[in-house]
Image 1 (cartoon, rainbow, N blue to C red):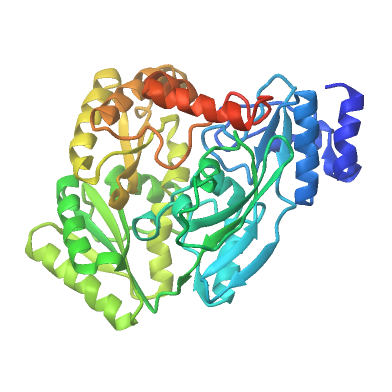
Image 2 (cartoon, rainbow, N blue to C red):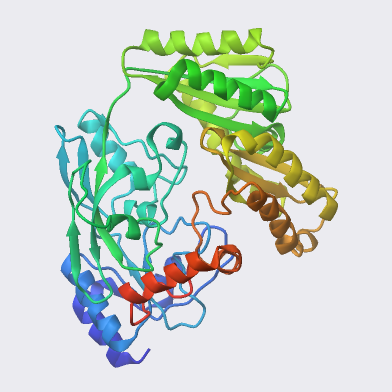
Length: 469
């Protein structure tokens, strides 16, 4: 990019917010997994929707590629510029205002740069709950959450980011602003445009603000850790819990024992929740809108029936908020703990809930044919069919040799996913990591429709090139 064009972009946001020094741009071109290093001549940090619009108008005019970026917590490279040094990073971090909280409508209107943690605090201060919850919520921004249709631990009861979004404000690649910040739960006036942008990973436009659903804060919350013998037992326990608790069942997380062992070995301040080890574990959360006593009675009923049916081998109930947080810490630390065990091959998949036990078994059979010494590190949101089906390298093995089989292992696992009509990306998105596989395996009509939509919204082809489609 020539100096004159950099000056034109910089003039829109002011020199202070146009970063060109490599030391200043470095945090924007390195992502959490270190798999997609990039380069950029310029990071722009607009402070208003008007500035975003001006940037995209100039980018379309000059055919300058733009990569929108939120908190840079994405795991599939969707927020990364490529290595060409041509793509400009558009950081939304300065658009960080909570514009409105409407208690009667149970909505919050927030700009794209508001972190998930700040959104939780704003909702809590208003006596409400915003249920989207991620391990990276201190850094992740709501614009990125929406662009990737983030999931997390609350999807079972509340849905993913798409279900939590009622309206959006979006700047199109032409610089036009779509103001669709409506609070309506019912609206049949034409195409649902907002849902083209939620999950589009910044390929169609830039989300600058959104209207999000809020919920009443639970009056009672109980968390239990359960040891059991198999995924089949977990599936039966999930059916029991769903029947007894209904919408009060707000989490049902499944974990293989290896995942817990990694956490206990590598994460300070953690302790085994049960007195002995078990092949599989489940974390159950019950949230009651009626009372703490109601939540306690529900979870005790579920565990009692689980013991009687032979589904539960052992269990513990959190006796305090601190203990409940400690149990959640075990679950939320599983991804971080895995890196201490060497290289890993990770999958973010979903299959029908009823198929989870068969999927786990069949995928593992496929993996050990390729890498017999590999270790299964599976954990995730069983209640909504989403597993992080991760594979760690053999003990004492060479990381490079293990990672050389990344594509082979990936293909084997994803073949089983497709056999169950599942998804190769449940909540992390497509980005750079899964783009080629999506194009190769999605129905041709679907990829053709996506390309047509992309061409209609972004005729200059400037928005987050080579991501998704």
